[in-house]
Picture 1 (tube, helix red, strand yellow):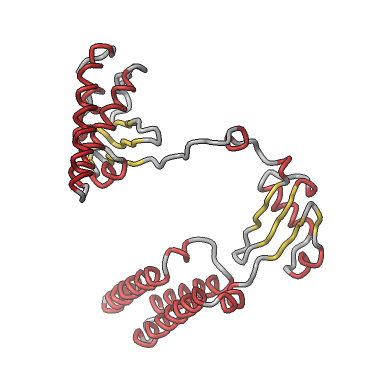
Picture 2 (picture 1 turned 90 degrees about the horizontal axis):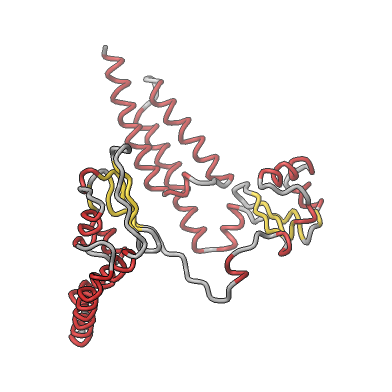
Length: 288
């Protein structure tokens, strides 16, 4: 029983230590690793597992070793951020494999890459002809990055239009029935606006599993009960929604603006929009 209790205590300390080390090293450790980071991850995990299972090992010495393996990579990461030559030495530099549709065989041999392995990596990215590739390089984390020739790149809206509106960022305003006011603020809408939108759909916040304001300012809702149907808002009502959103934003700006002139201007514009909404309501298919 004593041995089991000792194993529980040791494992608990080690788990806490690993959590501390992970937070210390940052989220980079969860993404693609460099060679050095890969070695550090394996070694720290091995030390932690050995300490947890072998009661004869000193817990103090093991934690000391863990801290050393944590702080040395942290120190190296700090130096890497400050010095490009040092960063290149530790993490390595990208190696070019293809340039203007031509394979650079010397660079392949330098990275111990065969032609078959290169083609396998290209096929994973749905590329089957080397001649279609303008540039391909192997990064220090082992990821092969590819740029296709202009004629082989997919057509985008930017190729068709000189001026194209930037895509906005969706904001999750309700999760698990809880309203997130910071998300409402970031989306530029008020709590009142959200209440109006939910009322139009005959939905209570506590019945909403997930609600998001998309880049067009439209509210999208997913209910806990998927069998319930959310009433559709007719197309002509979208204008009313947009007008109310603008009114809420102006009201918010009038309260948060620092300069008195701006406060007055925002308040005046909000009043004008409110008057316009009142006049326009009879022309919409749904009335509040």
